[in-house]
Length: 126
Image (cartoon, rainbow, N blue to C red; front, side):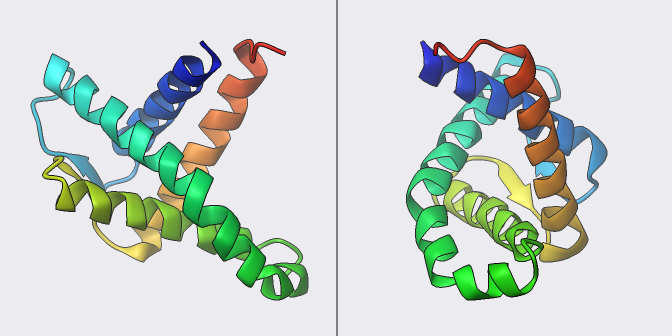
């Protein structure tokens, strides 16, 4: 149940990013069943990328993260969003992030903030 709630929260966070950031697009008719299905698939991919790739990148870049007082994490989050876009494209999922800055950078900030807010509101099963 916790996995489903977290995936739905990530889908909502991605939806907010699609609404506010011009370079992040879902190329299906807006608010259709296919649109929300794409957002759920992308949320699953995003979750896998954040679970597998992000810890490796953070471990390799821990010195830079410490040197920048954590600001480099914004770059890592944007890179994870771009990687999610690339994987989606390889799988034929119509989700695209145009470029690193401003699209992926601001999109990652929006996704992080919305996920954090939803995490405060939604039960986590603990």
